[in-house]
Each structure stands twice: as structure tokens, then as C-alpha cells.
Image (cartoon, rainbow, N blue to C red; front, side):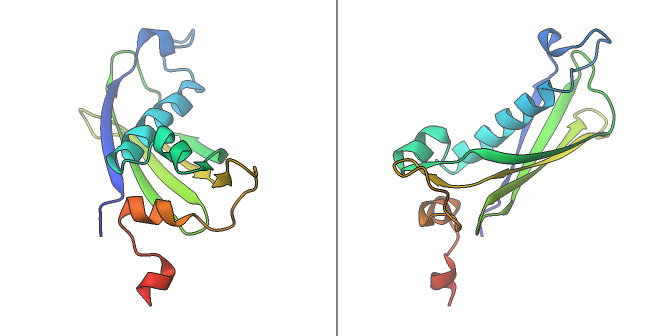
Amino acid sequence: MTTLSHEIELHAAFHDLDPMNIVWHGNYVKYLEIARCALLAKFDYDYPQMLESGWAWPIIDVHMKYIAPIEYGRPIRIRVTIVEWENRLKMDYLISDAQTGKRLHKASTIQVAVDINTKLMSWVCPSILWEKLGINTPAEQR
């Protein structure tokens, strides 16, 4: 099976800081988005390809745990892993200090498939997701 994870490295930018000179908590969501797009692009199923396939994938849930602050200029590593794909697309994230490996932040996001034309949510992920991830659908696994 294909590895359903990806890592990126970023540096905390000055414009992401709060008055205490650490990354403002709301910018962590932006970092998760950058990592998520890199992972989806790896499977040729980033947002433009999702739209082309007829599906929107809104995020319906975000869980975050702040462990330690991210400081200006500090290189960070973000690892994102797809952990569910049958009925929803769930991804887990780990942000760590790229130099020391120290854990800084843990998070997860959940996305659901919504038909672009009908605006109805699908209770199962469409087969295009399974195809792009290189995973057999349940019917093919039998």
C-alpha cells in the first residue's frame, strides 16, 4: 500500500507572530493547510482535482493541542498522515522542531465529500479518493 503520509518543512515567519513573539495560535491552521495540500498533491488530488472530480471536501472538524510555542525563524517539520478514508477523510498532524525533534503541536482534521451539483454530503467517500490513494475499495477487497 502507498504511504499515506507526507512531511514538509517550514520556518515561522515574522508576519505569523503575535505580540509575545511566538506564532499566533490561529496560524497553526494555516500550517496544517499547507501540509494537507502537499500531501493531497502527492496523490494528484489537491483541491483543483477534487473540484474536477465533482466533489468539494469541506473541513467539518479540527482538533488541536498546543504543546510548546513555535518561535520566529525556527524551522519546523509538519508530518501529515491520512488515517481514515472510508466515510470521511481524517488526517493527523504532528508539528515538531526540525532541529531537535521536540514535539510542538498535535492536530487532526476531518473532511467530508460533498457533491458539487446537489450540495449533498456523501456518507461514504467517493471511489475517486480510493483510486487516487491507490487503495482498493471495499468491494474490490473481497
